[in-house]
Length: 161
Image 1: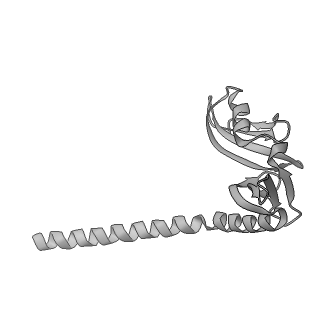
Image 2 (image 1 turned 180 degrees about the horizontal axis):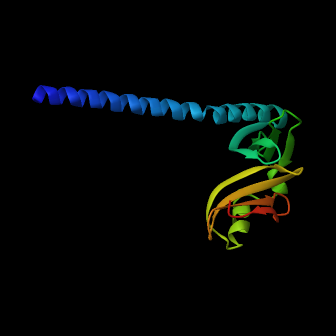
Image 3 (image 1 turned 90 degrees about the horizontal axis):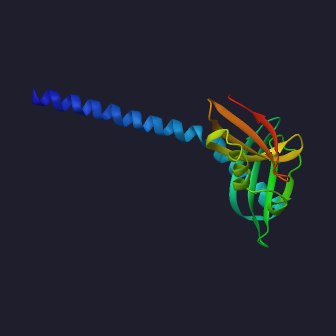
């Protein structure tokens, strides 16, 4: 009886370990496109804008997809590099020319329509740099806000998705 129980435990343990390994492999593979995009975006940003220290990376998708790298150059100037996924020309801006991530979040929270911020990203929408703030609505569902990077005004809002 003891021998049979030990054998069952070994089989169960083996299945459990195999399941954990498979889940780990699937999760690792699913994150691969993001890692690859970030790696390429950082490399390009170093070449086109002299970014030497990367602080943030954003994957932004609206009309077009942009990979955005925020960092400082070797003169310690904070820069933002917007890289269109389609390979067209990069847009380079100074961080001081617009609002920060925290200021965009504050703008959305000041509206008192949201209970929790889920995600913030930076990209270009209708040829203007914007912060996308995704939040849980007080009512229900998700709200999407686009906050103009330069003026700090909300330029687009999609509610209760």
